[in-house]
Length: 142
Image (cartoon, rainbow, N blue to C red; front, top):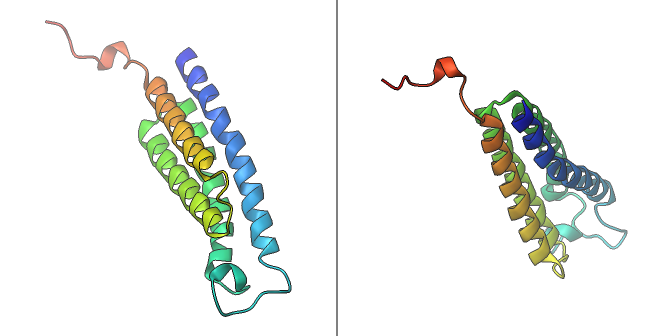
């Protein structure tokens, strides 16, 4: 049980980053673009572009993924945790790509490093949560 609690502690930075990401996605979905928008040109100048709806989808999927990841790590379910981590990482990569398309490029390397580090933390948490199999499930030595 102690290793699962330690694994859950490793998920906390992912939960915090997801909270920030969800708020950012919701803000960007509501803000879309200013009165200078037009439907010609790039998507970030078009208020009806589908990419604005993608922010809402990323907020929902990322939020669900981090909750499933946290619960699965506490429960020791490595398959569910792995699927949740892959989903979370995909959402984070999509968000980073959209932010770069919007022009937020001055700290893009930091965003990519943060995604890599947080995904690695999640992977370590999954491995740590698995722990050892119960004595009855281990192969006999002789």
